[in-house]
Image (cartoon, rainbow, N blue to C red; front, side, top):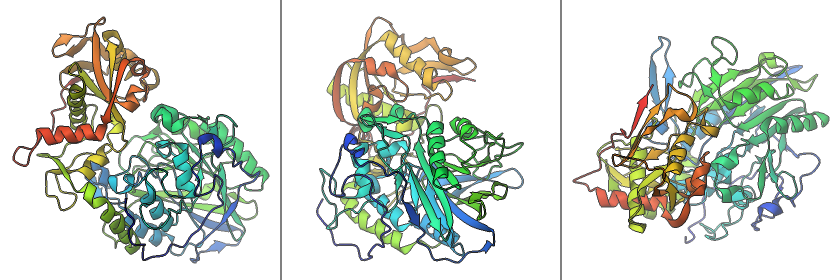
Length: 606
C-alpha cells in the first residue's frame, strides 16, 4: 500500500529489551532461539507518575488486566459487542461494550490515584482480527496497545496464526516482509514484552521469547510468567507452529516461579492463555458461590489447582468467558483466577497487597472485580485519531458491498445459521472447482463474528461489506477439496464428540443436504447416531467416495479431526472469504436479500 502522511501525535516509547532478532530482520523460528535469553529477565520500571497510597509495611498494587482483544479496535457489533449483567432480583440485562476508544478511557480513569499500577494481558491480543487491524497484519492493534500503556502480555494461540517470524516482527518492529511499510514510518513493534515461557524452539529447546518479566516500582517487585495453552498446535495451522514445541503449562510456570524466587522476586502473577467455563454467562456472576472454585470448570480449574503456591494470582483467557474466582492452590490457600471475556468488553481490576517485609503478596487481602467497558464515557482522542488514520487506508477495500441479508445471521448454538451459510458457500465454491463436490464442513471456531443487519458504517442496513465478511472469516484459509470414504466421513462426525473433543464437543457446521441426529443423552462417539447420517436423503455408503470441501485448517486435521488429514486427491482453492463473497454476491441483492438459514440440519436429542 502507498505511504500516507505521518501521524500527528509522536509516540512516547517504553521500549523493552529486545530479545529476538534486530528490528529490521525477519528471522526463522530456529533463529529465534539464537537470541538466547539472559540468565535473569530484565526488570521494567513503572512509567506512571500517579499518586497512590501505602500503609508502611503494606502497599496496594493495582493490576488491570484483559484478554482476547483479537484486534477489536472499533466497537464490536452484535452479540460480540454486548455483555450480560445479572441484576439484584436475579434477572439479566445486556450492555453494549467494547471499543479501544472506550477501553483506553476506562483504564486511564481506573489508574488515577494509583501510583503502583500495572496493566497486563492474557494473550490473543491479535489474530482473528477485524479488517481494520487484520488487513495490516495487526500493526494498528500493537500501536494501540502501546498507546494504552500495556506493560506485559502472554502470547496466545492466535499470536502464532502467521508463524514465529511474524510474531518476532510484532515484538521487534520492522515492515512486513512481503507487503512492506503501510505508512512512511517503519513499524516500531510492541513497547511491551510478549511472554512465551512454554513455547520452545525444537532445535535448541529454549524459549523463543522471554519467559518472564519483572515490574519494579520503589522497592516493590512483581514478576510475571506468560504461557499459552499446551494444545496450541491443535488449533493453529501447522505452518504457524512449525519448528516449535509447546510444553505443559503447570510445569513451565512452576519452573520459572522457582527461578524468580531465586532472584528475590516473591510476588508472582501467571498470565495463562487457557481458561474455564463459569456456571453463568453474566460477567458479574459470583464464581465462588457456593464455595471457592465451585462455579467454574474447564482446563483452568485443573491448572490453578496445580500451579505452585509461590504464584499469587492467575490472569487467564482463551475461552472468552468472564469470571473472578478463588481456586485453592495445592496448599489449600485461596488464589485469585480472573478472565475478562473478550474483544475489550471488560477489564479486571485486582488489588494485590504487597508486603514490603516479605516481598510477597498478602493473599488474604487480594480483591478483584470485572468492570464493563461501557460506551457512555468520552472516547480517548488519541485512539480516535489512530482508528481514523488506519480506516482511511482500509476504506477502499473494506467498504465494498459483497451481499445483502434480511436480518441478523448469528453464529451461536450447536448448529448456527451463519455456520450453515458458510458451509453452503464452501460447497458452492467447491462445485465451481470440481462439480463432483458432495458436501462441505466448517469448524465453528473459525466463525469469528455474526453478520448483523444493522449498518456498521454508512453502507445502509442489510448490506454486507467486505470488512464485515473479513471480520467473520479473517484467517485467509484456503478452501480445499479432498476425497474420503463413507467410513471416514462417519468417523469425522464422530470425532466431533470423541477423542480430544469428548469433553468439549466441536460440532462442525454442515452444508445443505447433509443431516444426522446428535443424541446428547449418550456419551462419546455414540452421541452421533450412525444410522441417521444422510446425504440428500440417502444413507452414507461406507465404501463409496465422497468429495468434501473444508478450509485448509480443518483439512489438515485441526481442531481434533485427524481423519480429515487422511483425505486424498487434494485440490487447493482460493481463500474462504472469497468463497463467502462469491456466494453472497451470487445469491443476494438489495431487492432479494439472503434470509437467515433455519439451522435445522442436525437433529439434537437432549
